[in-house]
Image (tube, rainbow, N blue to C red; front, side, top):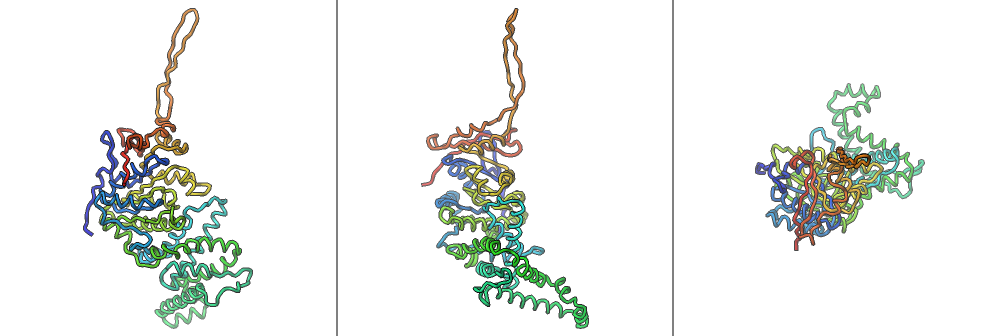
Length: 500
């Protein structure tokens, strides 16, 4: 890759009065809100997308609606970035085998098992309603994590890699003993047993190779004192991992009720089952990847996941969340001194693509030069998709990591109240006048300072929405600090444009 340097102080958006939003500012995150017909996609969303492309950003685009891919085809055409466009879609020639990609990521001190489990757990939990009691929530989270970890570890120990088919088969055939009675339909050489036997063979070979490095007398002494197993556990990590897996399935997993085991199994295999169906299997599991997050940064590629949730529903959502998670984790590890190309993750109808670690990622996105641009209709959409009794705090925590917020016209009172409170209050002089009637008529006047909302919630109902308003959409932009002539907010206008 040519060591190209990008101007991070260049204006990304320009506003009246000389105010600007720079490329560097975008790394602090941008949230756009607007009700149906407010013009957020065709005005501010479009302008942000076009200007990011003009400034050489690499990007990942998540899609909810079928027409979004055509928008991005127009965007790259208008900005001369057509050669950088990569579209993953049914019948296409671009693939991203995300599990194979994760298995190829080798980094000193980083557990491959942990990375894969974290990926699967994050995707499975995204969009789930975790509103059960605190203790129940902790139990299910722990049970899911332990089961995922054990299945993944067994796959790695037995085959040295992980793929969707093996994970699915092992999870489906995990021991189903209940009260000491083996289920009769369990085949004698099922995928779980086969993987365990292969893992035992491979691990035993590693143990034998390790022990061969010691004098025979020392080994004989360990055997005599009954310390051989403890010695192998201490020094051969794969032996220790295999023993943990065997203990989990033979003890912890076995003690769970059949209903609990079935629930955990369906949580895991539900996602894997969808990956084994077309078009997802061909696009994300079977064929070798035609690109990686790293090559996208090097070449400035724009990856559009043309798997809109309106057509592919839950499966489309989950695979897009998985891809987003892989890109987030890869991009935040890059050395910005070597490659300072800005990057973006863009999502219209963004609440459906949230996952539990988004706030953690956004906390470090600035130093990784990644712009998160999320468009949404309103706050309740975020609450509904985050789920759980703490969804309000989780959503506000996440939105708090997005430093720039653009509020278009909105019919949702909660969103308008949030915008008004975010912009804040100001002092004003409250004057009162009075007349006293007595022997002499006297007039008096008093003045006191009081607080009021700078922009009242009902003001957002009245913002121009394009169309009959001369295709001009109004909005309030808010940024932390005081970037707009000493203020944190500014009323702005965006020109609305539609593609034919």
